[in-house]
Image (tube, rainbow, N blue to C red):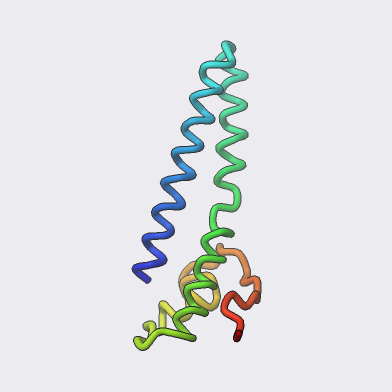
Length: 105
């Protein structure tokens, strides 16, 4: 799970940086405050509408790698998360893609 956490933090930090750049450009480009706020709200909503789909794919890859190569088993809760894309208490992540990221050679 440490690898997943590191990847997640890097992805989120990068997305937030990019979003900040876009919002700064909007601030500099649109003089009307109402229109500027409307456009910024649309862009922020698009960014946060489905935030977990890429992280779901990362979880699938880590799960397959762990099952195939790891000598240390994941905890029951971690295994559930990596397989189902959600913590037992959280039901908002994207469904698994069922793609085999580590096929046999």
